[in-house]
Amino acid sequence: MSEQSENNHIVLEARGVTKHFAVRRTGRDLLAGKRRAVHAVDDVSLRLRRGTVTALVGESGSGKSTVARLLAQLYPLTSGEIHLGGQPVKAGRGRSFRSYVRRVQLIFQDPFASLNPVHTVRYHLTRALKIHGRAGSGEAELEKNLTALLNRVQLTPPHQYLDKFPHELSGGQRQRVAIARALGADPQVLLADEPVSMLDVSIRLGVLNLLKDLKDRLHLAILYITHDIASARYFADTTLVMYAGRIVEGGDSETVTQRPAHPYTQLLIASAPDPDRVVAEEEQEETGSGEPPSLIDPPAGCRFHPRCPKAMERCRTELPPRFDLADGQWAACWLYEGDGTARTDDHEKEAAK
Ligand SMILES: Nc1ncnc2c1ncn2[C@@H]1O[C@H](COP(=O)(O)OP(=O)(O)OP(=O)(O)O)[C@@H](O)[C@H]1O
Ligand SMILES: [Mg+2]
Image (cartoon, rainbow, N blue to C red; front, side):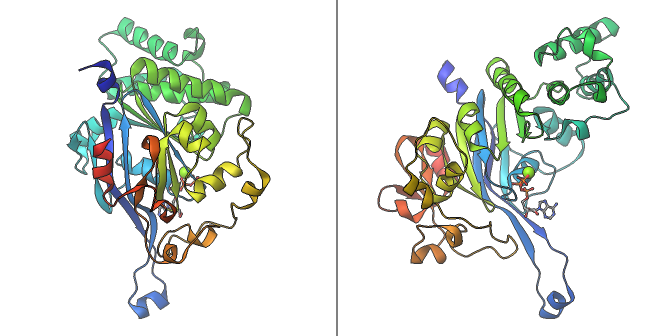
């Protein structure tokens, strides 16, 4: 296999993944015989490739964490499929679930909550290595593996950190320990759900650079979930934009952030100042405002239409398919009907890449 095709290797894939959460029925629902659900994630297809960072960007409540949890097999899917290494993943517990978790690790926003305050760094990392059968045989080998993990996340010299408790570390150091623990499994995929949003601005870049380093050295496929589209440009190879449970635009990060096609992406960019990008004021004013819609009863047609300054009549009733634009960029927006090639089947579109 050439280096290029190896780098493009797809590790984890979501096909038409959907998650609806049942809402507790009220007396009125019972009388009307209604079942209501939060349409948290609808028909999401994405591919995570070896040695590549994919950003999933969107505002609060758009379904980003739900996508990460579905990919981590923490929730059953309402519909759709997940493929790991080309094989469909069956929901389940037991051995197959453990082997899945070994390959696909999740990192959370708040490292303080994900580390146990009564245990040391040594305990957390030893446990991860043992669970995944990577502790080695004997004390010396374990010590070597622990040291290697801390070196990998740049907590050096390792012996200064091994016997510390979480509260004795800074936020950035704690997140590095959480990353080291995930690496203890020797995974292929890291799902990083807002990994730096709780950290002080001054140390965010260090942690993002660490993830970038892991992508390059360990060829990990990384899903980077963020509110901050400007950081996606800096850090991710590919950017996907999510609105109200659906992915509305995708492409390489430079293109999506510099030439956003979907009116929602344009709104996100206009509200995230980027000194490199000069946007005319009138263009900024066009971007519209408002709140995300209810996901219990999402708008028909394009879910963004109530906020969209460019909405047309059909946007209110017809769900736009993905339209392919230049350079691998695509947008699910009727504005591009004339310019792009519509693909109603996302998997086919992805497969054609
Ligand atoms: N376990 C659950 N049960 C019911 N509804 C849920 C559950 N988890 C998430 N939701 C709902 O699904 C929608 C998407 O939530 P999700 O946490 O995935 O959004 P998000 O994009 O990660 O938001 P944020 O940026 O605030 O983290 C929200 O409306 C949320 O209330
Ligand atoms: Mg979230």
